[in-house]
Length: 436
Image (cartoon, rainbow, N blue to C red; front, side):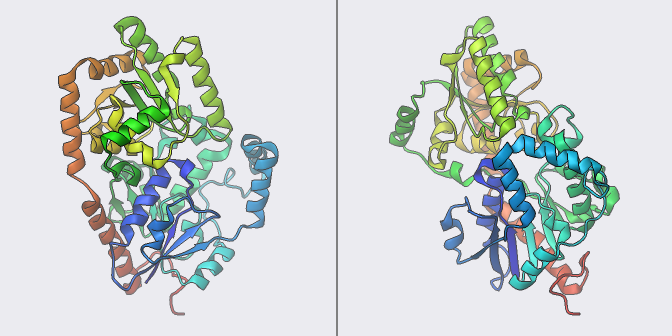
């Protein structure tokens, strides 16, 4: 059976890229020896070529559509934010747009269907969000990473310029058409069924597939390698680490304010090391706000931004840091927490639904809306070596309880179930490859 993987998330997408990378790495270890795999990309592929080549898999590129070309030209000409505003203005007055009718059933995409018919694709994995899940008649295994647009009104990255409506259309129609929906936690499963169970999704079609740490974080480091990373970036002896793109929901601003409280009220002056993308208008603006606040609070010597670091440096950054500090508003799961557990790095993260379960007693939980509470939590990790050791031990225990073997078994079972439905003719849609 030919199984396709929709691998279009670039590395700058962060978590979705890492999730897709893990899926590609483990899929070859599942299923039947007769299965063949096809990695489908959109232009250049950021995944290491060895990840695909060593498996002997094929790759293919989606053809750029005229609309896609126009969208790309608009972004290059006027910028991504202006392009989104123009699109949104038009969508509001077009009666059949996703903004006007977010939960309608879209028509099949004949161009994509022709592509898949030519390839002979029989099952598709969609680790990144794509309307192709429900616009192409190939049985789909689709991932729903989170439903934060339903729970947070204040963050433009999930609400503004039609983003809320686009997400609604995706989730509603995925629940209507996907053979299996993968979620990352029991919290994610509960949220999905509560919000969209009314659109034909039953519990049996939802599979909890917890994430793995990224491939980059699993490499052992030597003292010499750690020393080299420390020297290359000019890192101090003691620092806090936060790998995150500069979206508003990542909460960098309050974290910066907590550093000032640590200094002024607790006499502690750790350095905060930040890595991650600040591409696109919103992230650039957020980054500028964060750096401006750093200056206002006199923390220029205590905040170090490294940009987007190469994968080979990531393990050493965890190993050298005093703690991962991740006061994000979004869950229900986050890959850096798993990476920190694996590396023996203490974790300070948000006391919110989902992350409470993921942390499993292996993290100091803080109120993400309170810089004072963040400062208190960070101070505990910095000042209490006993507490720090407890966190490391519990994190390693959690990391050891679930790994590639368990992930592969769940993934294999999910794929086998879909293949059985195809064989018995019980799929929700009539596949393109079905006999007429």
